[in-house]
Length: 80
Image (cartoon, rainbow, N blue to C red; front, side, top):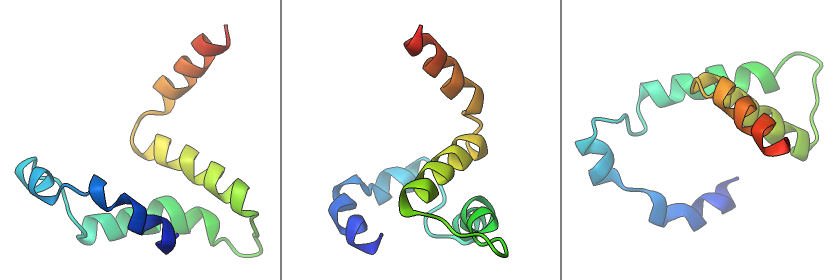
């Protein structure tokens, strides 16, 4: 995961994020990481393939960002 991060440096717009009053590497971000990612993947006795872990995390991020309904509606419309 660290190796992927170095390729996304151009996506980091700290000045824009500060102007928009978004949190940057703060306690809010760390808390969200523990809640969204660790709570699901670090359950006792669980194990994951890399592919399934990414898919599960993508769905959890959708739900945490309150995009759950729109994702499934878009998927339904695309399939129809």
